[in-house]
Image (cartoon, rainbow, N blue to C red; front, side):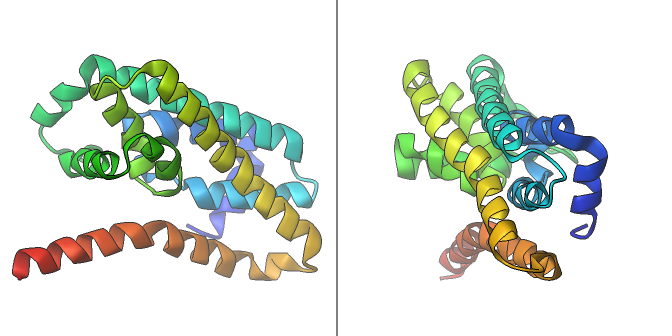
Amino acid sequence: MLPDLETVIRAVGLLGVWGIVYAESGLLVGFFLPGDSLLFTAGFLASQGVVNIALLSAGCAIAAIAGDSTGYWFGARVGRRLFQREDSLLFHREHLVRAEAFYAKHGRKTIILARFVPVVRTFAPIVAGMGSMDYRTFLTYNVVGGLLWGAGIPLVGYQLGSMIPDIDRYLLPIIGLIIIVSIAPGLLHFGREYLRQRG
């Protein structure tokens, strides 16, 4: 999958990247999409002239903010019913429970922090909507998180691509590291839960 990210971005262009960011941020089925690695790779490709970095960053931030707002309203309207749903290929209650626990621990900051945690970032705005978080408060944190994640990660990819000669030779290891860092919190959480249940 990793080697195909560049191909995907070249094929779908800016609109496709924005659509993926929106889906991962706001649609229930978007939790499996490659958010962090996609944004970094798109930023790198911008440094090579494939896409415009200003349009990429602005569009990704807007898509991320709009996606989280969609998730919030979905959670406010039908969120509680999700707990009665049977698990399916695209939906597992465990994802929702994990996001709810993350929200309970970190409070409003979850809307910002969850941006950098795969799966949780898709479900956190739904949990905020379910919990009737004041929308103006939610939107404030949403905008901050959307800018940091949606615009920030492409800019990091762009800067590294501009500064390091032949960085494309290191692109796959860098993306691999991003994925490892992204899933590490989840692995630690499951490890702690496993040890707690055994001990």
